Each structure stands twice: as structure tokens, then as C-alpha cells.
Length: 193
Image 1 (tube, rainbow, N blue to C red):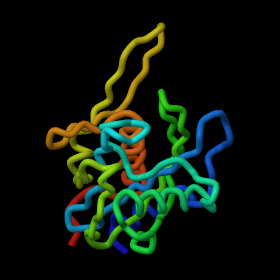
Image 2 (tube, rainbow, N blue to C red; image 1 turned 180 degrees about the horizontal axis):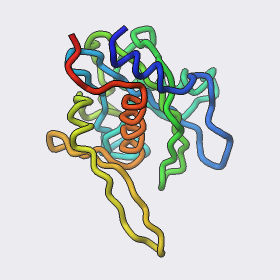
Image 3 (cartoon, one colour; image 1 turned 180 degrees about the vertical axis):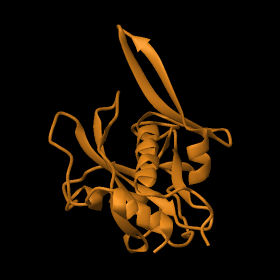
């Protein structure tokens, strides 16, 4: 097991805990971690024909279907549909805290899955315009917290600008939670042997 996978194991939550029930629609994403000499996350640039979050950078995932056994199944099913990565390619290590979308009304359960090698990708031409491989070290270096004052309340979010791509919103919050988990688990980001 690599240092990165070990750090995630120490810091992530269980994979069998569903987020609390509420008014938001349950959804799940997979946070695909490429455990390579320079570890990276796989993200997607959503197409302009999908129902929600057109043209945004996100993790593969979607809404829970009736046939999904649980939200982990949702994340794995959606990842295979969107990127062509079979569920058995992932070593699912744990989960991050649920994240709400501000406008679209989803409560997202993020699951972290490690890939020991770069998988063969078959992106859905309907759902995905581009697959992005963003180095974890770079994401940590460029992380910035932004905010706005609205109705006497300060609202903040995390944003990441890498190679002309901006990760923000719910995906930015998930990336931030992931980076916190890595630090909490003891990963310092130094090159692994």
C-alpha cells in the first residue's frame, strides 16, 4: 500500500454510511485517485447537453437510481457510464463528508477510489467533453478560499486554477475535503519511492 493510500485509509469515513435524509436529492460521486509516482485526481468537464451543471468540472457521478443498492453503487455505476472504468478496477478506500449543491438541490456522497495504474478511458460522448488529470500536489499548491458578502452573511468557497481549468462549487468543496483528509492522514506530498 502506498503512502497516499495509507493516509487516506487513516482519514476517510466508512463506505456504508448514507448521508442524512432531507429535502435534497441523493447523489454520489467517485473521487478517482491515480496512485502514480505523481498522484492525480481524474475529473470531468461535463458536456453542454447534460441535464445539470453543463460545462462544469466535476467528479464522475450522478443521482441515485432505484436499482442502486446504495450510494457507493451509484458512484461506481455512474463512473463506469461516464468514463468506462469498471467498478472492480477501484480500490474503494472510504468516503468524504456529504456535500450539498447550492442551486440544483443535490446532497452528494463522495467516495474515494484508488487506481493503481492509469485506466483505459472510454468517456461518454453525451455526458463528457473532456477528462482532466490534475496532480494532487498542484491542487494543494493553488488552493484558494474565496468569498462574497451577501445579505450580511459571508459565503466562502474553495477554488483551484490548474492549466486554465477552474474547479469550484461542490467539486471544489470535495477537493478541499480530500486534501484535508490527506493531511489529516499524514501524507505530506513528498515524492514517493
